[in-house]
Image (cartoon, rainbow, N blue to C red; front, side, top):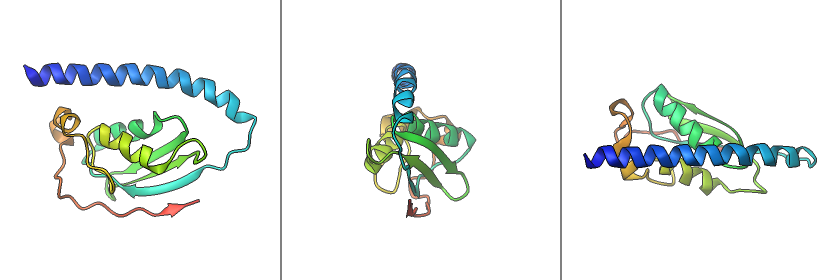
Length: 136
C-alpha cells in the first residue's frame, strides 16, 4: 500500500512539473529567438535497460529549461544532450536524470524513484556504462 501511495505521489509530482515546464519552455523560446545561442553538447553514461527507460531518461533531461535535445542510447548506456550553457550547467542534467531514478556517471539515482520504476526498468546498479565525452 505504501508503494502505491509513493508511486501516486511521484507520478503526480512529475505531471505537475511537466505541465509547468511546458509553459516555461513556450515563454523562453520566444525570448531566445532574439539572441544567438550556441548550444553545448555533452555525452555521459546513464544506467538503464529498455525503451521505457529511454523515454523517462530523455524526458527528465528535456524537461529542463535550457535543454534543447537529449538522446539516450540503450546499447551504449550513454546520453547526448544539447543545452544552453549560459542558463544551466551539466550537473543540473545529471541531477534531473538521477531524480527520475537512474544512475549517471556523476550522480546516483534516487532510490525511491528507482523503486517506483517498472520491473523492466530496474537495472543492475553494477551495470557498465560508457563514459561520455564533452563536445561543443
